[in-house]
Length: 98
View 1: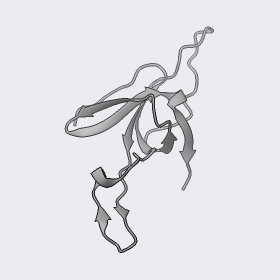
View 2: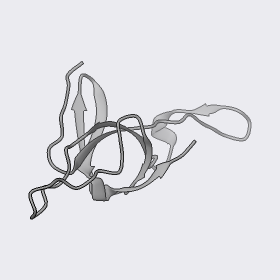
View 3: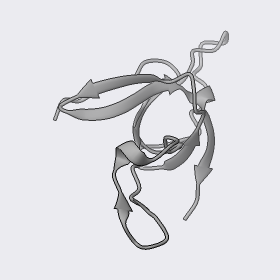
């Protein structure tokens, strides 16, 4: 697996693909689902934005967190036949606690 290290306040996310079933129990293929999921797992986290005082801002998420992200604004990339999203920490709306 290729390793990716985001810079600054960027994060790498792996969208969580959930199987969708209709009422009769038939599993619908991913292409039949109307809207993309907005839940992802954090794969990599940058070191934080460099502040004017020379320190780095805290990121607020860590690798392995499940997060809710903005529908638009993240860049989609493909590595090792896997789909990922790359964006700013500001594109993450919430951490999902289990």
